[in-house]
Amino acid sequence: MADGERGRPTKWTQALQDAICEDIRLGMPYKWAAARQGIHDQTIRNWAKRGEDKEEPYVGFFEALTRANAECMRACVMAVKLSDSANTTHKGSEFLLDRRFRGDFGRVTGHELTGANGGAIKTEAGLDGKSTAELAALLARVESMESPDKD
Image (cartoon, rainbow, N blue to C red; front, top):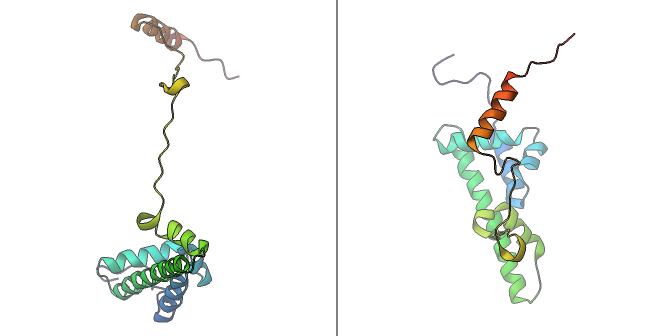
C-alpha cells in the first residue's frame, strides 16, 4: 500500500453522493439518509471531514453535502416565512430548523435551581462537621481493617 492509502476501497460513488444529498436536502437526518444507502451515518461524517481537509474524492462530497444542508435550511425558512405572511403555522419546518440547525435556530433556554425561598440549595456529603483529625482517624480505621476471607 502506498503512503496515505487506507485499508479498503471506498464505498463512495457519485450516485451514492447524489442519493445521500437528496435525502439531506429533504431534511432527513444523516442516520437515516445513510441507512437508506446501506452505510453508517459516521461514514457520512468521515467523508465530509476528509473533504473539508481537501482529500479527494471527498472534496466534492463535502461541498455537495454543505449545499444540501443549506438548501434544506432555505426551504424551511421559506416555509416559515410564507406561513407567517398567510397567518398560518408551519410547525414541521420550525421543528426541523430547531433540531437540524440548532446553532442557528434552536431555542436558548436556561434553568436556575434555587432552594427554599430562592436561597441556596443545601447539599450534604455526610461528613459535615468532622474535623481533619476525626477524618484522619476514620481513614486509619478503614485502612487497618482486614479484608474478609474468600473461602
